[in-house]
Length: 330
Image (cartoon, rainbow, N blue to C red; front, side, top):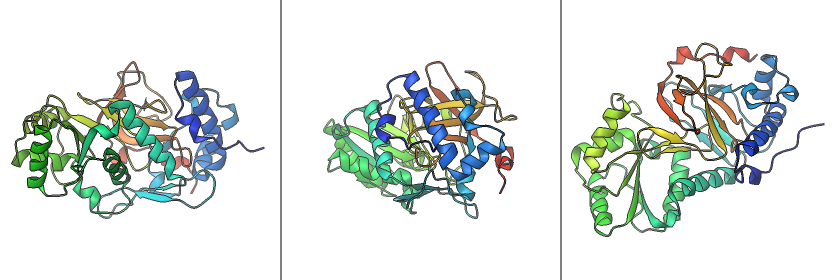
């Protein structure tokens, strides 16, 4: 007899660790039966899904499979297909989303948990590399947040730094709560050409350099942005095409997850071995909102976890360092 499909309402009503663990195991069994690529992966590891009884025994699917396979639990037609930006010549990740309302609930509830009512903010977006292509899950989220803010000043600025500067000055003068969400290189470009002394502004960086500028360590990057915008700290959003949840940092690069998302750290040489808090390794993400694809993803970032469920991102793997894909028979 098949494992029944999980009601998304259960995901967003999680309030405790036991609830999370129970639902994660239920979702694991469902996906190990109904997601073909994950089912093959689990079987080829020699793992019997019905014998897995704790979270540490759940295997994490290497994120690369979103480039080579359709990662979908169950059948149906995708309402949205989110795609990664990818480098020229590189395969794109594709995340077929059967029920986009699950994504909407996930990012709206997460935003509310960390920042409160969206209607008290103006949402400004400086996301050129995302706007200039189709299929960005970040743009889908930003569109919704901009609409939800119900503020006439909310919107995208692409490369129009003068209008963005004028808007920031206006919002500062009217004491409007404001969030500027931007891809890292675009925020740097703006900060180099303008100096905004707006201490109450929330500057939220997302993405990275996208090949536009040299990579920088977080402390150097945040110092430049803090100086350019006149803010005490820089916030960050941690999300990706293959996930339907985000973690947020309100400073110092320490990220917090919503109740239905967890991060653990794997040994870079043995991807099935989990590491303790404070040890550096590959990031594994459990995203229960990924109910219709795979909720257990081994991503290409390096990081470490801390007591209380927080984590830090320290960099990215080189592609040659990713192990585990050969565990799936093509």
